[in-house]
Image 1 (cartoon, helix red, strand yellow):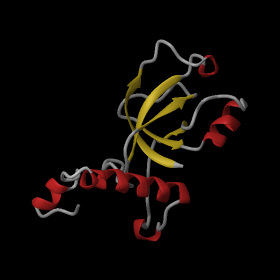
Image 2: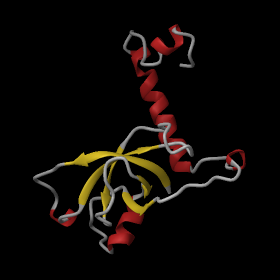
Image 3: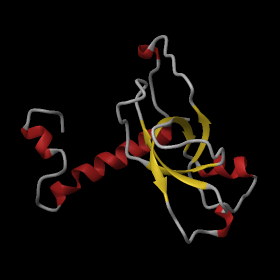
Image 4: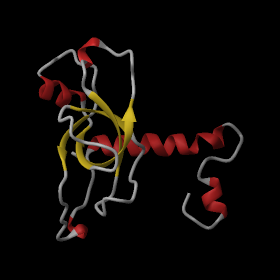
Length: 136
């Protein structure tokens, strides 16, 4: 599961029939402080119809999980909100180590995209941070 902050609604007047009237929300993964962005945002279905902008939620980002939740093997969904977080308490953040294989693959893809600017002959997106003395 991924801890996310809902950053907005996604409006799609034309959509796949299997999505039905379910809400689409833009979810941004966040660190355990529930504020610091952790990864790029993604679109998730909200079967609960309760999450809104600014809410903290738990989402899954695996198509098989979406198909199980909706009991529909044909639903075109990759991500689903599974819980609205009321309170978050982390006793020992240092004790939480590691990442799922899917997160590692996505992080590698994001890093490759960030370096793509170098292959086109120009500076990549991290070049400005590196010039300011930040990490690239």
